[in-house]
Image 1 (tube, rainbow, N blue to C red):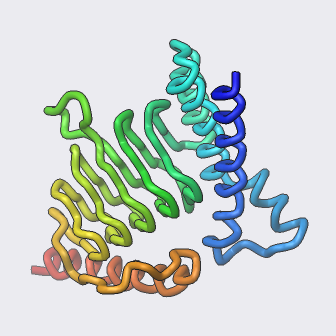
Image 2 (cartoon, helix red, strand yellow; image 1 turned 180 degrees about the vertical axis):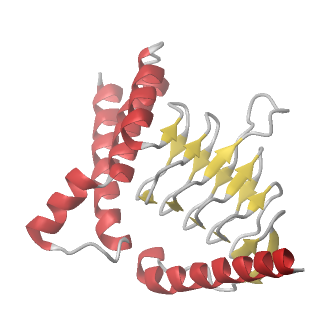
Length: 221
């Protein structure tokens, strides 16, 4: 009984941290009572992760069959975000514009991780057992990026928009392209993610513009 109550409290504390993460990470957050009402009622990314906290508890702690998969299917229909009940996700997880996100069964995500729309944490189709990525703390993954297979993304790394990642990513590095290659290595990984939101967004936009320029050059050639 004590273990059950402790698990419930852990879920509740994690849910509160997820809600606060929206206010800390989204520049569009207005603050005040109306701002928080928008967060609670108008953020499908938050709805998806809050539902997953409960669904994962049913799946991993209570070992209830069928129902967790059914509920995750319903949430996919409601939010456009697919998270397998078995996926392990840390605190302060933030999904920005989450349509099309897919997170596989054996994916593991650390604390303070941010995902944009269209991200896939998937398998290669060739592996069994642990077959989805492990993403460490303070990682940002840009729109449309695909991380495939049993790979590891180190703490503080950034994955550029549209990147396809099939190899391990070093802590503190930025990778872009298809297949993804290291573009920048950061030496300081201790800065809080929430304090760098605007700089992160500017950097991601610069990467997206570079990818677009390369694409247009190829089309013009």
